[in-house]
Length: 196
Image 1 (cartoon, one colour):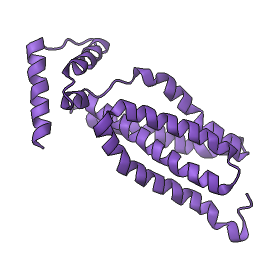
Image 2 (spheres, rainbow, N blue to C red):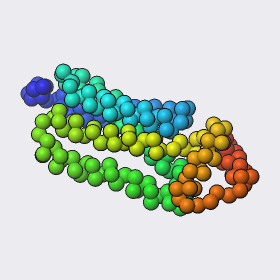
Image 3 (spheres, one colour):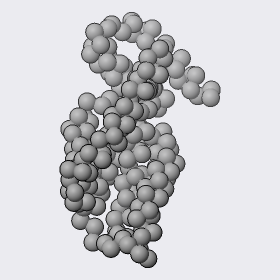
Image 4 (cartoon, helix red, strand yellow):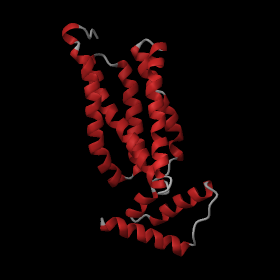
């Protein structure tokens, strides 16, 4: 795209646009998660990021690439936030800080590996493809991601919340409290949230 001389500013515009996309994604994602649930927003963000990220490989010009990068960054931030919120809402308060730190490790490792990948994959289109291919793996494991029980409870979907909690207890080889105690806890959670 000849990003030299008087067009050199477009190089940094891509980075600035990505940051703007993160900002816009942060503004929109919270509202969407609260309205429609964490899981659907996560899927929408994942598909948006993956499809538009791969389409960026075929951008006919820098302006199309910048526009795609804006929306991809919004989706990327949405994906990160929704999965982080689901993880936090599924963890106990005693393990929340540990898992919050561990959640960021793959992102940090990815950024550290990026120069090595860029060294091996010199063509920007193939590099862009290499960066967005891991999203396919995430799409395959998406079906393992439960909806947040807390969100289900707040939206009066108690039976679905009990199903998610039952599945989590089975995976963790734990037993849930008796049904009446569980329903009391669900009511207590709903009361706490509606008071805020």
